Image 1 (cartoon, rainbow, N blue to C red):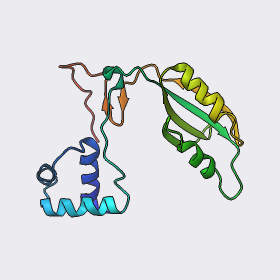
Image 2: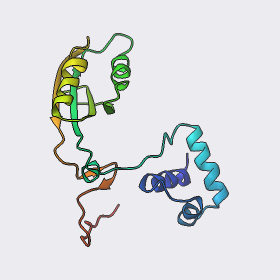
Image 3: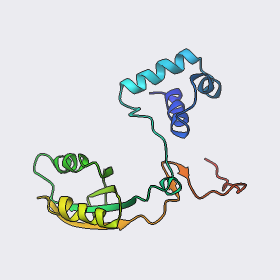
Image 4: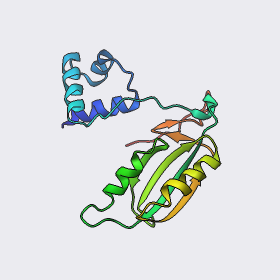
Length: 163
C-alpha cells in the first residue's frame, strides 16, 4: 500500500459516491489506475463495504441506540474472540470492539425502545458464560457518526484545523 492507495481510501471514506473520474481528477491518477487500485483494495479486504451514514433521528424511525460495555473472562487459547463472535451474530448489534480500560468489549446496539434494549442485555448478553459485568449507556443524541457531523446548521462555519 502506497500514498496513492491511502489517498483513495481517504477520498472514499469521505464520500464513497465519488465516481472514478472524480477521484482521478482529485488524486491526479488515471481513471483506469483508480479502478485497478480500488479492485485490489477490495480484493485484499481493505475496503470492506460501502455504506450510507443515516441520521436516524431525522428519519424518524424512533429506534433507541445504546453503548454497552462488557467485562469478560477471556477464554484460554481464544481470548475474547469466541465470545465476540457469538455477540456479533445478534441482529441488534451494530458494532463490537475490543477496548482498553475498565471494560473489555464495547458494543453498540439498537432496539425499538429502551425496554427492548434492556431486555436484549438482560436476556441475551448478561447471562452469557464469560460475561462478568455490563454497563449500558443509552445514546440520547448523535452529533457525529462515521466522520459525518449532524449538528451543523446551514451557514455555520466549520472550525478551522491544520495537519
